[in-house]
Length: 136
View 1 (cartoon, rainbow, N blue to C red):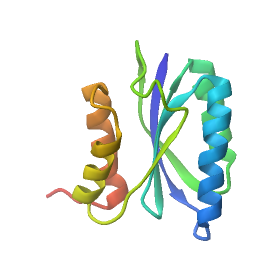
View 2: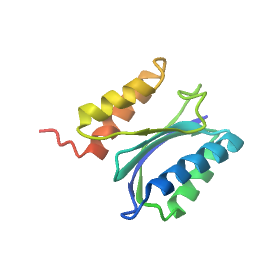
View 3: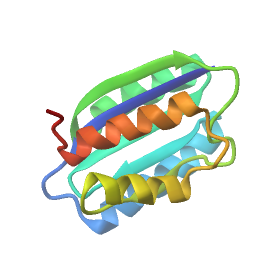
């Protein structure tokens, strides 16, 4: 199986209804395609972890690159996995606000405690990216 994490920029005019449609469609289609994962949205940027067969993940990434509701899809992590980190989520949406620490706390409250530590660390690093955190 494959796990892939990317970030992207939401369309400037993305509405709450469109975000709900993204979530609903992802949840429904991913269940059919055997994809699980996590979608984080901070109001302007997306962070998504998707996991499934290599073919299903690659096909989804191709569709995501054509979706006009976001742009600048940047793959940040790609790895082979033995088991899923989010086996019960066809796509869980976590909306975050505020600082990096607030976002990290909101994500940690939602993701399962037994998520692979490498995946958890990857999500934390990517949360820094979408929060605009600059390390000095």
